Image (cartoon, rainbow, N blue to C red; front, side):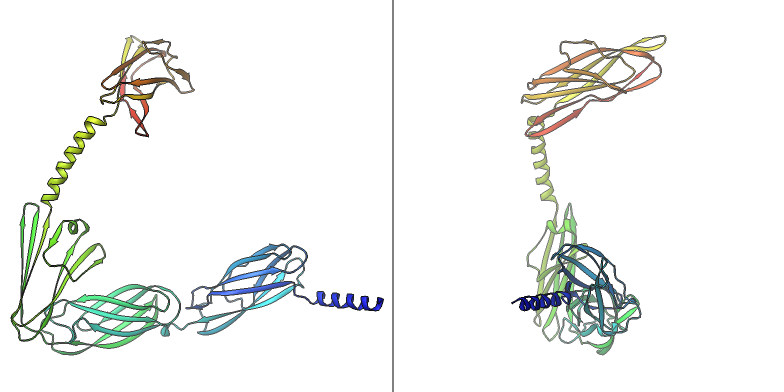
Length: 461
């Protein structure tokens, strides 16, 4: 029995001596990157020891940029962190295995390894140029503004920001800056006008896509220019007092069905007051403007008429009337308490030696105002007042640089005017100009606090 117990103890000791002291796990957040982009992993380090340990880590490839961290992990506790790996500028495209050694700072012999897989993509294989086509089935019409659609494909499950796209041909040139979501098929729509004398045929369009100085795509596609029908277009614009009206007439004098459109740009203010007799085919926002597009087919001999009116006059008149009504109601029912401050001075040959201050508080409204606190201040060159009118202050205090007087007034009924007065003497005669601080009153009205200040006062000796 004793030998059996010794054997079991040896087995337990042997298993604990070779047991892993740490358990490391990670999840890929973003392990497919372009050169210079961050590969991100969520890493968990678990301490399997019976004691707290200080743990750090080091990567096998020192050319990669990463931030070293240190963790104090309690027994059977764990540290969770996000590891960011940035490949060197000269990192070759392809799959990279980055080893990480997790070790104890207390006992460097305690360590485990984990491996991270990062796929570094070649710039030239990231974006695919899928297609370029026009909104009209036969190609570009030299007589009108043409809508062109360019399709670009992000081939990988990564986000790419601030990508420069250049679309160039002998017919037009367009430049864009776009962002790609993960594996996004990006559709870029734009309008172009080409020379009316452009000959029918197929034209090269070179599409270049760059990220900084690195080229992501460089493809040459074809775009057709079609023949056009004889469509007469007449747009008449008339302006009156705060009214603008546009009448669009289109007449198909050709011998085939044609698709026509009319585009109108409005800003945010204009679109609120614009009306039309035919609903637009679609509306879209581009930059700081709103574009209303009417798209329609014209049969041979068919005429299309559209009326658009922007009317500011009627809404402005309504707003003026409402404003006058609101002002009348507000002025008569919600007048604020007014506060005036007058300062009367007693002068001598040596300057101003005494002042009388009048605070005139008036409630011009119809409702009684309750719980009013009136506060007045004076400079520290005066003595604490001791002569008051019929209403004495609730408190008078002198601070280092000012004297503060406070009156608490229970209520002032509608239309009532209160005059509060007191006299004050200067500790030294005032010579020259002196600015007197404003008085203020505070009261609550309709569950909000209202503060009213008095006028400014300046006295001269």
